[in-house]
Image 1 (tube, rainbow, N blue to C red):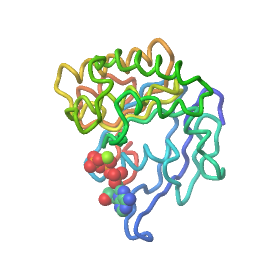
Image 2 (spheres, protein in one colour):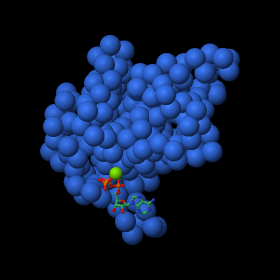
Image 3 (cartoon, helix red, strand yellow):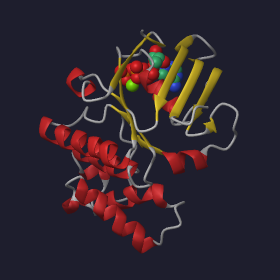
Length: 222
Ligand SMILES: Nc1ncnc2c1ncn2[C@@H]1O[C@H](COP(=O)(O)OP(=O)(O)OP(=O)(O)O)[C@@H](O)[C@H]1O
Ligand SMILES: [Mg+2]
């Protein structure tokens, strides 16, 4: 793996339903450390599946995938990889309903070795960064969709990830909050050299990236 690259994917394939569905059909993709890449393409084309592969949430059937020096196809235990390297902003928020907002943000820090007090401090800073200081004690079900999305973003930043994978991060936000989130994500990319990989349907949002990749029928359109 070339040192400048943080993602190297070759001939990656992924099917579902015992191969009846081909979600990814030979993806070749290289992303440099610190790059900001947007991924566009029609519904069902394989964007979320690709993001899940990069975040090691699912395993490929064929091909190779190397992220931040980890061989994601060959290695068995990938929880360390995920907790060290990845911040995931899901298309659906995946917040834990019976935990409060601030507790949800603390989840990725459990393996960090920080004390409970430090975890709380950091979670509160991240929530303030997302303009949610007044909602920290609430449960996710007591929030609007856009507020939940902002909690999910705060949570994705809690482990200081080297890569942020964002699946439609502004999908459920009004334009003001959407812009705020994009600015925050872009700041992380500009100032902390975080690699940002973002799926979006919005071409205006996609154009903020340094490079846009189009996925079509499980392949990258060239
Ligand atoms: N767990 C699964 N089981 C079966 N099929 C799946 C599964 N996940 C995804 N698929 C199928 O794989 C294909 C790619 O899905 P994927 O979620 O990657 O699309 P997408 O590009 O993210 O679409 P959208 O823009 O609607 O989010 C689709 O045909 C989808 O129905
Ligand atoms: Mg999707």
